Amino acid sequence: MRKYISSEVPQSSICNLDCVYCYIPKNKILNKVHKKWAEKIRNGTHYETMSEYFPDGLTAISFWGGEPTLGFKDLERLTDLLDFNKNLTQFSTSTNFAKIEGLEFLLKTLNDYQKKTGRQLSFDLQISIDGTKENTEKNRGIGTYDRTVNNLKRLKEFSKEIDCMFVNLHCKPTNMAEDYKNFAENPQTLMDFLDSFNYLNNFLMVNLGVIDYSKIGICCNFRIILE
Image (cartoon, rainbow, N blue to C red; front, side):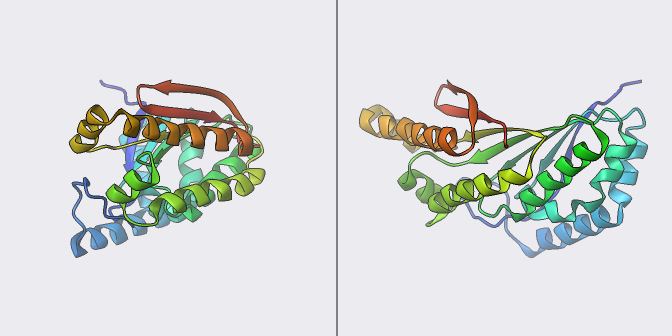
């Protein structure tokens, strides 16, 4: 019998942005789906089903959507799933980082659980930002770049409440075919693109205590401990 150790959990079927390359439709049906998911997550039946389907327990969960963080405030009973799955230690999500109240709630919940139980937890946080302000706002809407940077500043203040859990933060750009054509025809745009991530890296090193940094192609990783 096959044994599952990780699972992707649908957390939100809606999104607060409308990126030009997104394949997920924005309609009333998905709003209804979101409400049904939220109800099952809040009343615990979602986690009861997971516990029945994965009787051997999970070690890792990835939250996805839509914009997953829009459903994070419904995760009050996540600790029930942690109690059932004694080996569950790894969490991850990808976010547009437009609003972080839900993310703050989830990180605080996991941090408090670790302090209470002593179980070492980790969270892999992927933030979507498409390079320069011009490129990001062309793809993701006016104001999205500044909102992301401002939320990174807010994360600095919030990090004081996360005193024992490990958080791995990295950024992921999404680019259109025309962007790569532009990079090839105008190398300066590629340099500007890479410099935008160097700026974010320097910002994180100063404000969030980066302990390791590496570039993979044109995607930058920021590995941090929130203290």
